[in-house]
Length: 70
Image (cartoon, rainbow, N blue to C red; front, side):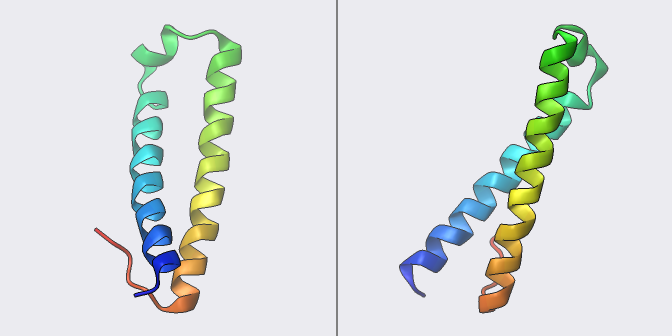
């Protein structure tokens, strides 16, 4: 397997975990109560950008036919 493919697969796995953790955090009302409205908004926005980036990365991986890591 090419080095760049290994790096993409590694990045996909790490990004997926980060997205899951951030989504868990912002979906918990107790966590959000501790943040200002501006910070809440920015965290939701960050999650949206991360998810969009993740989708593009997965499309690139699918395009080359590499299996995603679990």
